[in-house]
Amino acid sequence: MNTAQIKCLLVFSVFAIIGFGPVSPGCLIGMYIVIARPQWFITFAQDLYDNPHPPHFQERLGTDSEKQTRQTRLKCFLSLLGLFIIDIAPIPTTPIIAAFIIFIRPAWFIRTIANVYGKDLKA
Image 1 (cartoon, rainbow, N blue to C red):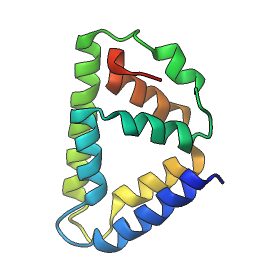
Image 2: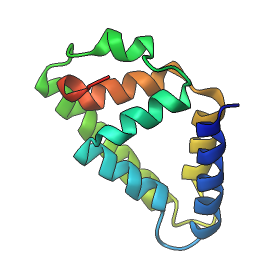
Image 3: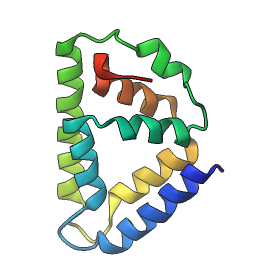
């Protein structure tokens, strides 16, 4: 387990505790990332996967059209909005999903990041 994974687990542990209210901080941050596509998130993902240049970033660099990127961003935003609504229930689902991503580090997560960023991806 690398330091980025440990930091993420600590943050999402706090999110799980404070997520029992009507606000899901993990979903809000995710929605911000999908809308603003900040460069710090690319650096975070590279640190999480413990690789300065994950091959999935390089494979996807600039391959998505603006329309594909927009569709992916809309799907991700709606998914996060759905999780935001579900998180109002007594079981915080977003931190559970985040823990899965942090521990397993699935390839689909990197592909989704690349699809969200599209041509704006600067790996």
